[in-house]
Length: 65
Length: 257
Image 1 (cartoon, rainbow over the protein chains, first blue to last red):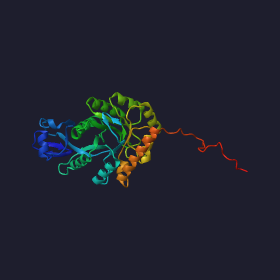
Image 2: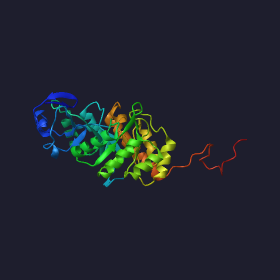
Image 3: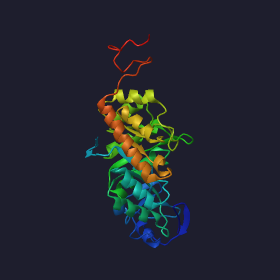
């Protein structure tokens, strides 16, 4: 299934956001996630089902003013 | 100084972006003696994991973080960014930026008030980046904000306090609200001037990060802010147009002839 991760198309087999993070190698990283523009808390990633064309954003702390 | 329920000693809030290196950033934060640094959220690459190293550095510094919503141009983006920031940084503090114009990075004050209301109702402690407009300030307070952060000048411009009259009026109108000048500060004298007006604190980034010696400039700002605050508390004299001799006139000997 094709999904867009941080603006880049990926082919993944994962059915949930939690599984996608694992497949994409974000395990043990401090990240926050959004699915199709909506925040998905870490505790709800297991229940967040993925569908073809979904947009996933994965963010982390960065320098800011 | 009390910001929401937290007592803060340092009146300098420092940004963490644009430093020559992480080591210089860390040194500047220590030299500034700040207790609050601003941070952001950006896309993380699984391969590079830049954010993980940065976050480890900030945690080591032992300061409180104020996450921002920099770059957000809509209420939805700002609210979603705030929600992500609350989870990742484990704080309900948010520096709320809703940008309305790309050249000046001027806040969209309508979106700002709307986003502030949503976030305050959701339990956030909102630090709104705003213009110095009195009515906008009133609306933000009505929306639940307990701190206001008017700009001095456009972000990164280093031009100082563009509207002294507006900033003075804002201070006079809201004597009990913590007011922080955020953005536009270029040199320590700008920060001192804002503190002399009675502002509670200064938030700056570029002026330190882009200085020749960022830690030394951080120290200079800390001193200027402390001096400005002390001067405000001491009460400044009233300026006048004509000279007034400071040495007593009475008792001057007659020596002209």
